[in-house]
Image (cartoon, rainbow, N blue to C red; front, side):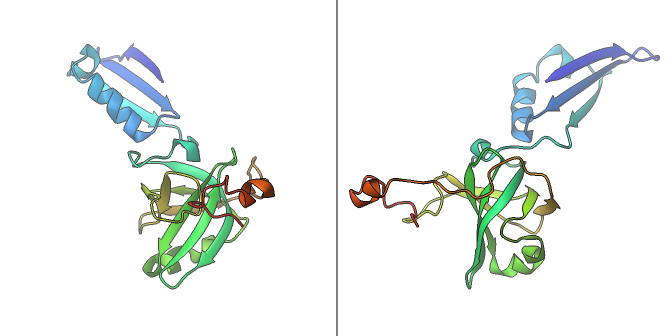
Length: 183
């Protein structure tokens, strides 16, 4: 975070706060921690808060406490069921998470989503990845809403495929838990 304070011509203090890669929840925590500080108490102060337009989160940063994230992912796998469209999403660091679109919203997003395509997602929901058989070893999964935005892009500096290899011997000897899919 960078903060700059300067005097305006009319004598008011002007504070510029650049948050960079901070997420909304991090800013709110900082604001709560500093609500009694001189900076936030100053009545003559105007705040200009800029979050970088290209500030992206990575999948390892996703948890159920975050409510304003933006991620760039490759769609590694996509499949349709009668009640949803599901996909495996992978970021540039090779981390994966499951995404789900309920049946009534599929028509809003289907034309933007294809295996191998690269997209920037924002305004999605984050839920616990619970159940007896999880597709991805991540504690969360993404839910698409009416407000979710999908932007197709071309540049992706991460892996193309998303394989996680394990030894056949480990599968045979049940060293790999059965709570995650192996195929």
